[in-house]
Image 1: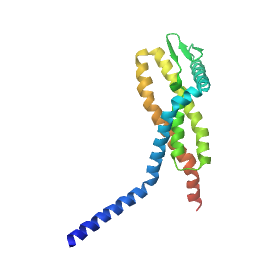
Image 2 (image 1 turned 60 degrees about the horizontal axis):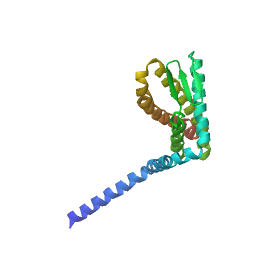
Image 3 (image 1 turned 30 degrees about the horizontal axis):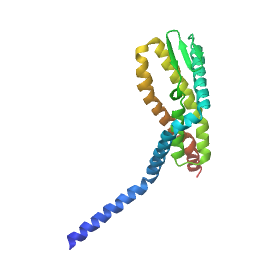
Image 4 (image 1 turned 45 degrees about the vertical axis):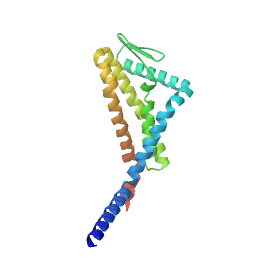
Length: 194
């Protein structure tokens, strides 16, 4: 009888311990579930929305091409832009939806929405983070376009692999920066003043 009671008590202790760990990680689990749900919604609705908002997406692609061309000219390169096509003397790119940084901005927004912070802080984060991600995306476009002109063989690797990973890391960095500088800023100020 004693062994059964000890076994039963031990399993109840383990169950209580597991529940306590689950409660302590509830915020992390909640964030992950909301973030994944938002990404799923984004992935399933984006094709429909991109068709529905095609004029706006076309405008964003052309604006990205124009900004990339302007930036390349600032670097002293001879560049022509025609609609969504950016051309250097021996290399051209066509700016498509994936080149605009829109996906990265939406992923950033999904992470911000999923994070437990007030809407005021989320709006501040969107107002600062989205333009920052757009500028970083333009830097990426300038880099891959110039690289494609100078070294066409490395263009595919840099475009398809390096910058894909780099943009994921940049999204995470901008998101963490938002958490540290906007979300936790007031919390730190309250702790200091108490």
